[in-house]
Length: 25
Image (cartoon, rainbow, N blue to C red; front, side, top):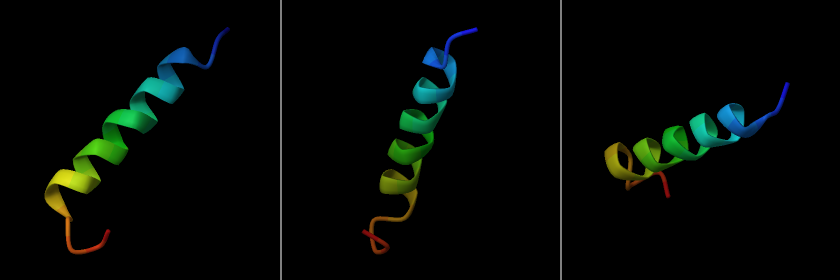
């Protein structure tokens, strides 16, 4: 089992947070 998908999911989630919550960053 590799963590590739987990990392990819984390990156996507991070991107979504940056897009939808720019004030937070």
